[in-house]
Image (cartoon, rainbow, N blue to C red; front, side, top):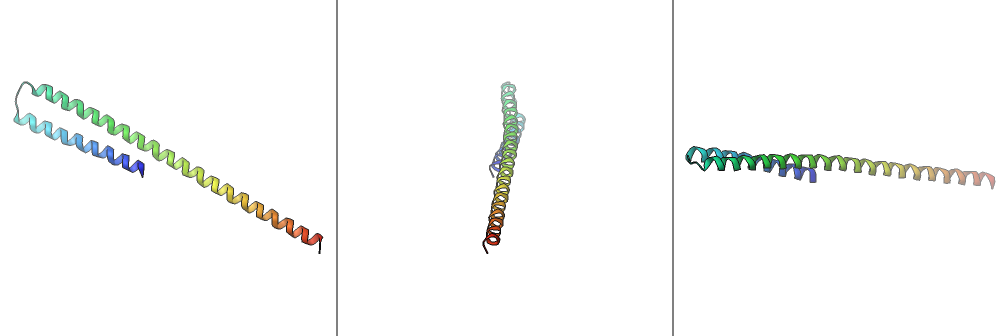
Length: 105
């Protein structure tokens, strides 16, 4: 669930980056000033940072999902081992009870 939430955040950041690109284009079409070179540079820097953050979030999501899968596997293996140990103990107790009953008719 946390992995999905992080993925949603990465998607939101990418959508915001796309919106920023649209604003940059609209602003560039309507404002022809010397300052636009600086403004466009800042837009580009923001867009690059947003892409970097979204990629990092996706990497974190992958790590979280991999870790969760490993933890679930360990839990299932532990449950299986406990069930096997319980079944073996019950079988041993039953065998001992049977042997005792045969020894003391």
